[in-house]
Image 1 (cartoon, one colour):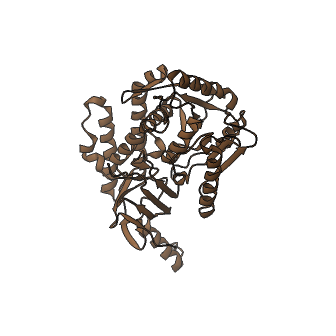
Image 2 (image 1 turned 90 degrees about the vertical axis):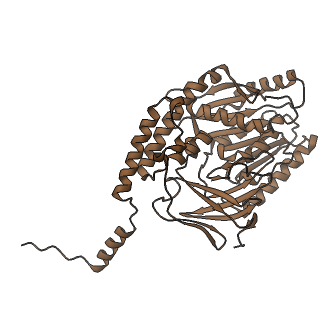
Image 3 (image 1 turned 135 degrees about the vertical axis):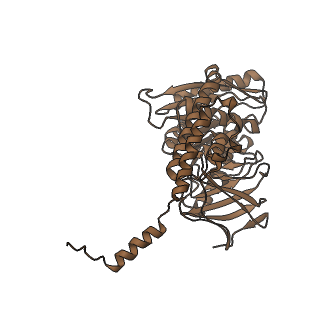
Amino acid sequence: MKCLPLLRPELIIAFCLGLAFRPALSAADTQGSSRAIKQLETWLRQPRDQRPPLSQQSFARTPLTKADAQKARNLLWEDHAAFIKNTRSAEMQAKVIELDGLKMRFEIVSFGPTKPLPPAGRSLFIAMHGGGGAPTAVNDSQWKNQIRLAQAYAPKEGLYLAPRAPTDTWNLWHQAHIDRFLSRLIENLIVLGPVNPDRIYLMGYSAGGDGVYQVAPRMADRFAAAAMMAGHPNEASPLGLRNLPFILQVGELDAAYKRNQIAAEWGRKLAALHEADPQGYTHKVEIHAGKGHWMDLADKQAIPWMENFQRQPYPNRIVWRQDDVTHEQFYWLALPEGTGKVNQEIQVTRRGNTVQIDKMTDANQLHIRLNDDMVNLDATVTVLHGTQTLFQGKVSRTIWMLAKTLQERGDPKLVFCSEIPVHLKSSTTSSPAK
């Protein structure tokens, strides 16, 4: 009889440890996960208006394996894309979106080859026009000028979209409805462009630059980079730009409202933030010598500068500072409905499977959202605040969370299969200094 070779003790120990720590669902759980996918397929085959609420379906809460979570994600995305094509194509062809009694018209200029399309989709440049509190005809002319600027800016490839502000007010790009309109355009074009959700850029001139100062920090998770030209920030804060490359340009002689001085001041603020956090706050500031409010297209350098960047949808560190227009989701963080507040600030860091809440001001509840692109969901996840452990354990992947986050954002990269709600004892708190 042939004898098998003896294994060295250290190999036996390593083998046993590997089995002990190998993440896996039990056979019953695996079967339940597979059954949930089949039930999801059955649910999706029903006409949309005849489907029973997903929140009431037990299969939607069944824990999934990693592979089945990816299957569910794909199925839900295909269903979402079909819905967008069926219900939003007309508004994109008409080049007008209507929300809450307001209308946003837009024009699109295409650049680069259309065949073959980039595998991940085309780039999108959203360019906001100047004007403000002026007669409709004035703002219309500013919009048409922004459309003409497409040929001067000339990105290498992609779609240049110039929206017409829904109002003729001084703060035409500051108001809460702007975020909803931009989100709608992005959601539509991810499907109908098709646009790469990680290559969406925001830019604006004059009053449009005012809008970039305001919208970019509060919607930083939707853009790959942003360019402010000849604008004024009003009360906006740069803190939310931690993961959004930001270029500011004004003319040296653009003294109205102190635009030139304030741009330089923002440059100093961003430099200080970057020095304290070298992995964040990528920025560039250009005060163009001898130029006034109109920079004679010197500002077109913003386009190739922005094209160098792609969005990171799952940054390891998030700085979320709420503006006067509040949001309930930001990257992989969320707040319970109705708890977003002006000037609320949340700072969170992720290292492997550990999430550290560094700061929470004027908030005591937070939802940590996760997926398999971020962490190992088959291993223990820990959420800390200072020395306090708020959560430690394994979390489930569910169809319900995938569907919920897809419905909220319409962004395939901001879909999460797991969520950890945590509650802090104090509503104004931060971790001890390190």
